[in-house]
Image 1: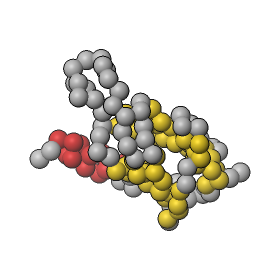
Image 2: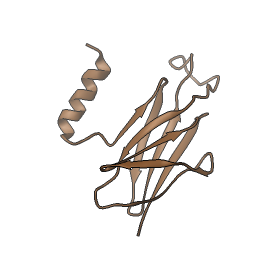
Image 3: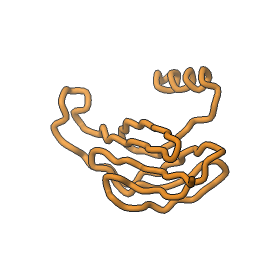
Length: 118
């Protein structure tokens, strides 16, 4: 059995709650989420590199479009979604308690900022 699958299943079992984010990727990303009272930010760090396990990064390999599904707390309403590194708004669609969006590309780091209505 794949160790990452085993670890993922153990975390899902221990937390006993829906996954807060899913990303369709063909690369290696480090993903972290910070939820505040009026906003939520998702940091996407591109770790894709042919020498990833061989010490310091020697080359940045940009990655193409990433499809993201982000769970939004039930008591929050999304007002705006924007990319901080690219400095532009991003289109999104809502389904149940989630939003779906696409990040066009990531060189090294992108931040998806979700602003909630007051």
